[in-house]
Length: 151
Length: 116
Image (cartoon, rainbow over all chains, first blue to last red):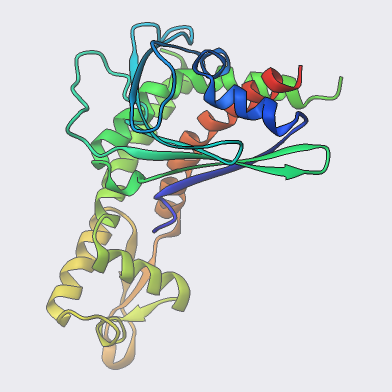
């Protein structure tokens, strides 16, 4: 696995593990922070579709193929990352795997997110996926800045 | 279109050939060797590769076309020396970094969601 194949993130959430688990695996709660309106619950082995609610991307439908649900420990799914262009059939392309892992930590829950499989994607798709999402970066950076700035 | 968006699109257009050039095991190995061992001659590079010298030369030219490596004269027996063009690799890393920022945004929203 190369440096360009995966993204790994770790964040300490000041909330009990059960609370974080619900936010990840209850489809309505997941949709609230991820900004997607999902059509059904998450079940291992099942596909779930949803409509993005993020401003400017409301025309986009995403599909998650749920892989593993191991209570309060691991939640994983496959999807087509940044499959946001209307009228393009992404179904024949490789997917990336997203894994959320939860661990008990002092003061809350340690969440690790790994998305892997980027090296399998066609390079043209990676470039395009990046381009389509670029509009959202500036706004998200402002959100982060606001969040981390001292109150 | 904002200036920021124009800059980003130009960045993608130039990043795509870098990923294409790196998407081959032999070429990636050559880049890794130049990265860890510094500038090397064709002889050095062929010694550690499971392919012929002609094949290594061909791969190096493909990497050079993508702007990832460059060669200069002056090695042993006047052989050319190959070295990394560090700026291009940096662009490839920046590309993934931007995808990574999307996750930062989502996780920030999750943090607010579970901590409130």
